Amino acid sequence: MRKKEVIFIILSISIVLFITFKIDIFGSHLLINVQGRAEHLVSNTQEFGLNNFSSVPIKESRIIAVNGKVKAKSTDISIPIKRLSNKKLITHTNSYGIFTFRLKPGIYTFFIVQENNAYLNSFDGKGYYKSHKVSSESDNILISVTDKSYF
Image (cartoon, rainbow, N blue to C red; front, top):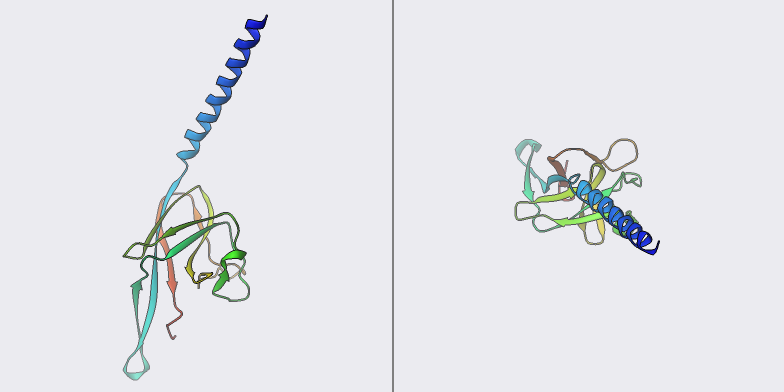
């Protein structure tokens, strides 16, 4: 009888480990490559009051991806990092202003870090910062910093 109990316990542990291992393998395949670019949008006033815009990549800056939508306070373009959800990931831009994340499918809001604040000058018109649905590989996320531009 004792032998049957030991075999049952070993078999149960093996099944639990197998199921756990299978779930981990399955979960790792759900990560999606997401790429974006951070840029300074610079305006140059020319003759006759016309504005010319150019973009300059923001090199080696921290980018935050927050899981879910982030409520904006009025039209503030920045929010203290400590007010963001604990469900956030951080990466850095390269010398071309490009950043990359590997994310689970879902809704994410992307910010660039300026001092102790998360900056995003893009809103959804419903009281939130602009968010992105991540469901397949994407390279169309753009964070434009406009603090030195005049429109």
